[in-house]
Image (cartoon, rainbow, N blue to C red; front, top):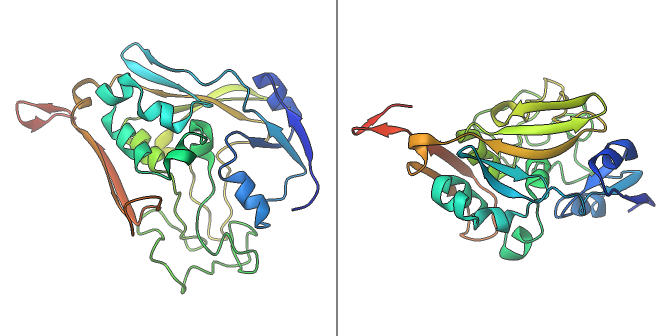
Length: 252
């Protein structure tokens, strides 16, 4: 690890102005720094931002970016009305990591592609135009759908799959003000050289994630994950579905 500056932000405005890599639970970024994949000049600690609420809003759900995965998974509204989200969260990592990892960090985590995590391997995600070592390499945990000629890595989040099924929206604040992005399109595909638009622009911060009222889908939603072992393993294949069933028929 190389030397870096450290700043603790007490407000969203301070986090936006600090101009550094955001540190929430630290379950992904610190690992990337240790193996030499990430080398930020400044860490901006946002762990004290007052964004940890999980609350029902107009029949839907609002999840603060600093809410811990474990707290989200056991929230009574999530269990009753968004069961696929609880299933997705509980299928990921370990209890210890779920107690540390945050909703915002879960959304923003980097791919777990082994070639991306190896600084000695060409990787378009790390260095656009250098090539994709996974193409022609070991691809058991790589994309079947949603890939390009420049990158076949997957996003590792279980939670994001369930959020997309529930039509969730990510709320973002930055130097240009407040905006929102649908979860379904939040992670853009890279171009042929492996580069592509970032999910967040410099200075932007996720403040919360909002899920609309699931209506008839509340009880008819599930998350399924195929992995090499039953605990602490990333998905080989996963899927989330939320169906509105009326009189035995799919209505939405």
